[in-house]
Length: 178
Ligand SMILES: [Zn+2]
Image 1 (cartoon, rainbow, N blue to C red):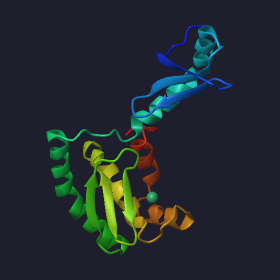
Image 2 (tube, rainbow, N blue to C red; image 1 turned 90 degrees about the horizontal axis):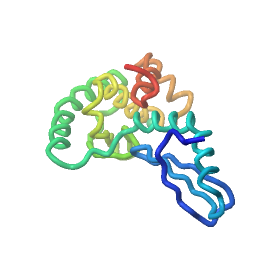
Image 3 (spheres, protein in one colour; image 1 turned 135 degrees about the vertical axis):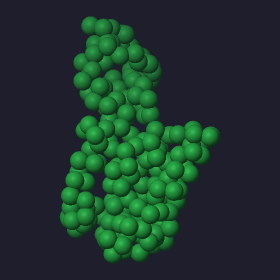
Image 4 (cartoon, rainbow, N blue to C red; image 1 turned 45 degrees about the horizontal axis):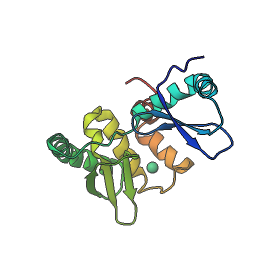
């Protein structure tokens, strides 16, 4: 059976076939023991087609590393304008101190919150997403100033302030339509 995906074979001293879908572009790599024929590898990849498609879909929803350059700078200045009023609004509504704001290119996170220094870092990529998703990330990071962990208390803070936060998270992570 012909595999429906392009893939790279890495011959290794291992016992079993192993398949990896690599971030950020979803390249498929199969690590294979030296003696396993290509036909077996091809069948193995074909067998995993649904799994590969699902992983690629998930990767497509992940933040893509933006290259530094004029586009990134334009996006940064958009966020520098849009974020402070939104952050101020939500900090007041949620009763938390206004944090300092940093905007960075990040590969795996949409935002982070340092609860000690009260610093919220946002992924530059958010400038290219719907404003409702930026708002979701802001409320999420501010909620950490109330509760550090992702626990029941944290989620009840989210429910209280942004009742549709689960939908926004699904859209942000590429598992739902906007
Ligand atoms: Zn969090």
